[in-house]
Image 1 (cartoon, rainbow, N blue to C red):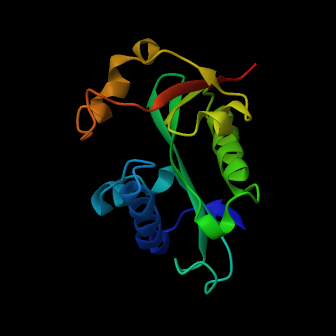
Image 2: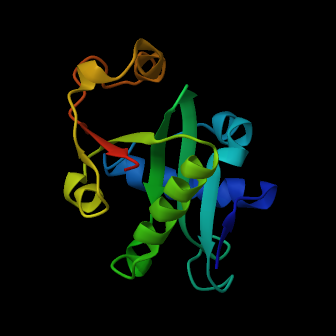
Length: 156
């Protein structure tokens, strides 16, 4: 079941993000930032005992950055649930929410560009993203040598 994240999901989201951050596949987030950004997250929930994460089978966030610009971030699906379309469902739900907010441009910084290309994203040079976006990047341990690829989706 795909739904908005709730307070009780935060520790599962944190564990999921830390799991993939340890593999250098995405950037981890602090518990504090996850509580601050709870409303950004959507989760996919399975039976509570199947994932070992309290039933969490995936998470994804839509973070609003600026006028008419948002970011898809923290997309993570446990290995046991990958290749079932859950990532697609989560990203599509975030994109639909962006449209509801009147946002027609959504970007992502990712190590998985092919996945996002299949969802209608295209490459964009990081320099085309506004300075506001880079406020998060300044705090990243990989800054300024980020090797994530920037992609953007634009509502037609």
